[in-house]
Image (cartoon, rainbow, N blue to C red; front, side):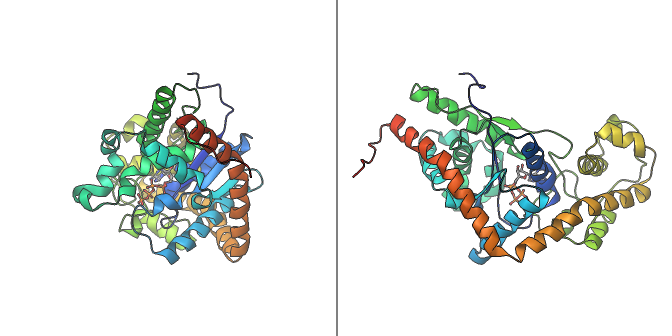
Length: 342
Ligand code: AQP
């Protein structure tokens, strides 16, 4: 099966499960905006069905979904250029996920590190949805015949599973129907680590708020969190190999590079030899400079929630023009009787 026989189309999503943080911004959102500039048809999704695989307070979920949409737009996504949707408003995601639940194998799901991390020792008590999460993610992508999926490093394994599902479907039904989607994991911001522990990824669910920079943090809070970020006592190196075995230093340099659109080598050429006491204020200024306009715009957009709801409704209409025929064709391939016109 040729991976290039499908028209390029981009899909990605973020869970409305709490505050957007710098990791989501650099690993995903900022790169969605870069893709938008390439003029490829793109769909960006607030994946609320994924969010409820762990408990969400209903009122918080609504607020987080609208806030996420505001974050998408504030970061530079234009709802006229990209299709912005709330997953639950496009029923084909869940419908195709059921078909994929019947294609994917239990053993594939059991190997997923995110399942093991999130279910932990309490797997018997985890939701069935959390276990099946990667099949829904495959459906999110493939219900658009998306070919490219910009994500952070942590989603690599789920993307491989989406590829396995597409391959097995095509093989089982002897068709060339689903593209094999390409993960696009590029740049210095694909794995932003906790500010408190350079071995843990920055995450919404970390109990320590000091571990992450939220897109809703004000300038003082951002500067304070960077000032207090864990580091080591040595000066910064002039070459990337000097960051080996220095996870916290590497993380702060990666963040600087990703925020400033530079490579790690370029950053180190400028800051090599500096102490953290000198570098941290530089990073804080840069982070405030890049993030504050987004935060301000997000708050402004949140004042007009009706407008956000209209954008999502319109996005769902545009999305369904793509997804409904793909789902119908999937059902035909699987052998489901179509409804007749009356
Ligand atoms: N630390 C990160 N560095 C780079 N990219 C990241 N992403 C998440 N964390 C980092 C990327 O953001 C996109 C959306 O992620 P998500 O919210 O759907 O899921 P997640 O990975 O589960 O996010 P969190 O913050 O880690 O949530 P919790 O704490 O609930 O598990 C994805 O492209 C992801 O790679």
